[in-house]
Length: 92
Image (cartoon, rainbow, N blue to C red; front, side, top):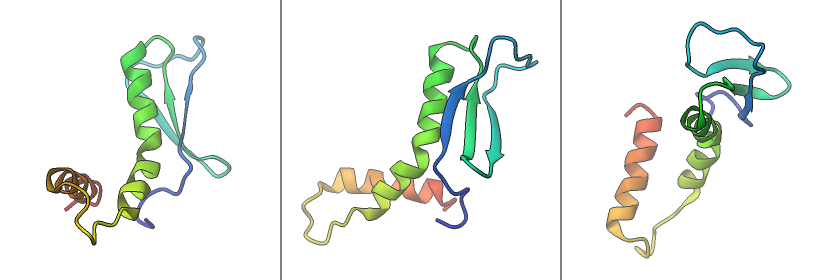
């Protein structure tokens, strides 16, 4: 996974005193904590949920990458979904 920012990725809330002109989550890279995704306190539950989902992306990617289906025990539709998600993450 060397093309991606090394983890772990973390999400946290910005303080109310923090002033942003947009409602998009902020992203910064931190040598100690990897990629840090920050969500505004006033964005609501959806923005916070999106930030948590993005922070979990490296772990989900690695989990999907580690799944093997040599014996065909994973239903084809589920296997195809996993392969599409991996291809999307890899820009294919």
